[in-house]
Amino acid sequence: MTQLLLAHGVGSRGTLPLPLWQFAWAAIAALVLSFVALGALWRTPKLNDARGRAVPGTAGLMLVGTWLLRAIGLAIYGITISAALFGTDIGGEAVNIAPVSIYVMVWVAVPVASAVFGNIWSALNPFATIGLLFPERRTATPPGHHWVAVGTMFGFLFLELVHPSGDSPRILGYAMVVYTAIMLAGMAKFGRVWLDRADGFAIVFSAISAIAPFTTGDDGALRVRRPLAGLRDVTVLPGTTMLILTVLGGTSFDGFSESPIFTDIIGRPSGWSAVVPLTVGLVVMIGIAAVLYWSGSQATATVTKIGHDEAADLFAPALVPIVWAYAVAHYAQLLVDQSQSFWFRLSNPYGRFDEAGAPTTNWFGAADGEVNLNLIDVDVVAWIQALSIVVGHVLAVLYAHDLAVSRFSARDATRSQQTMLFVMVLYSVAGLWLLFAA
Image (cartoon, rainbow, N blue to C red; front, top):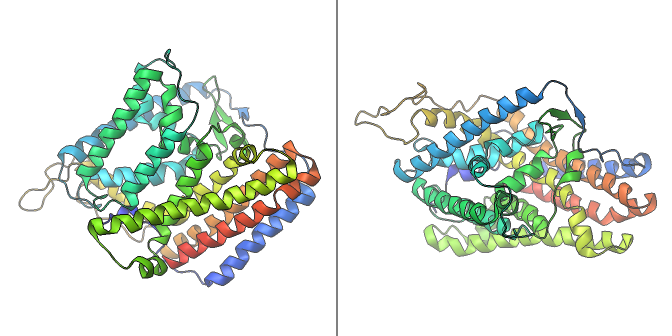
């Protein structure tokens, strides 16, 4: 199968001085010790202030920055879709800008940065900018769920991980046209609120940004808060939990599909003959992530005497640090390498060259640039990848505990998370195995 290199960023060229079993035991110890320490020392909620503290005099600066990001996002969107539809139909990081723009800069760079700087996608998102032409709400009642977003996100993962021509700029261009039509039609009927229901990227990136210590207040000023505190404000509707689990399972499948076990199971089919086994694998990995989480939620519901669905939705934001950690772990090396390629391709976005091999356009004088594969030491990147999985799961345990002590008695709060701790251990060990095996 001719699959895009950019879509598979799992693993690293670096090495770790510890074998998998030692790193796995260290991860388990970190999770268990964190859980015990939280139960003994963290008796009251500390992450319930999602608004944080305003930084005086920043409203004007934030407004300028927002409109600058809006302009950049709209320009990159226009360049990407036009290059995908009318540029050279050759995939890969060395020619058309579309694959790098979508698979690296949007799918990897935005969520990684959002966990640090806040919801930058709310400004970069071209549909949010176009949406300013529409009212916030129309008379038609918008859907009260995120199931449309689940469908659009699964469609993207299918294109990235399954479709035999997922690296084709033309295929990506057609997909962008379809996605744009869905967003515009929804806003025309329901208003801008449609994006909060159906735009899977916006919903997922917004949830990841809730990890960040920075946010923007209603007055437009920058606000500083405790990391993870923003997760209290994540909107959970029917389908939200499944959306998060779909992303988590999809990223896990990206790693599993590169492992020797998977190739031993399905062999090495190519083209359309690989679509069925890859689709089954993707669905199974999402299903495994969901079954594990809902099993933990059932145990939480039993202890706390609340409904199972209520427990699953209540603690769904705790999965967000894991989603972010998996993005860092699976795509860190890809981001380091191919973010450079994005800049080179931006100078010649249509990927056209003359007979002598020179780029026909060179807007920023960087079209002849080459990726520096040693920009960051590969062993450092490998450590970042492995440690991010451990840190992500520890943060998930920490937030879940804080939420539990805010809702239940101290005794029930600790007991309610015991099974979920086991789920986190399984997630962590599986994530490390996928990283080491790829």
